[in-house]
Image (cartoon, rainbow, N blue to C red; front, side, top):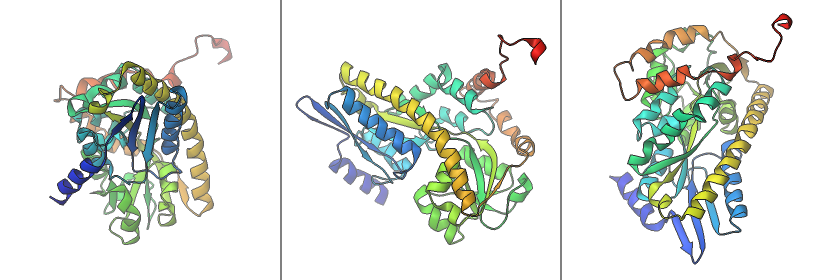
Length: 338
């Protein structure tokens, strides 16, 4: 009840889209801190909208959960109280079930394979999947590969997760994955995780290197296992209520700015990953690179559970059938030189 009241109040005081004469302002809310590379990409998006529209289309950004958690900003998006939000695909699956395929462990063979999927027909279809829930995807941001970090002991193999409470997003797929590896999946809001680790509510979590570093979680968790179980992308979404208020020119500006921001983000992400790993190691974190095969074997049955889901299994098959560019031989090479 308190949550509904809060959302009602916020819906009353927030306007996702504000227009004065020929100038329009869009509200963008998300939960990341202002140093995160995905936030910086959203800043690039806002700057580009302003530049290419000659100031006629502004984007005002509210970071760090100023307007609520990811779930709450999705609800505000549905009301049209904010125009745009960034959430993990793992959280979006609670609103648009078809997107849960993006959180399956080891469904992406490499970063290049993930880009090939998300930039192709499968990605286009998944971006439009939430339309019936009054939101449309604008793009997928690279959120890297997620791995485990723990406080008391390292994780070198799946059995090392036995008995550990591991924080996960509000995602059934993430819960099933951690539980399938022998851990105890514990959903918790991102903003509550630092204190949760401090107080022993959870024994660890799983996330990408930039988030592990920028959150300060490395100050508590001194073991980081790069088993890279999932590559759950971030999704930038817009309220269909607001999108339909934009004229054709404004929609074109948004799409052009998205393309520029996405290209910027992918370069910034790779750099941020390397910087984050170097920083946490310098701070005393033991970075472990385990054999991934045991983790993959333990989780292989998660794919089988979707065989009786005609709404999801074809998408999984399409992802797995998408060629991995890193595995495609260079047809110009001389076989005698290989």
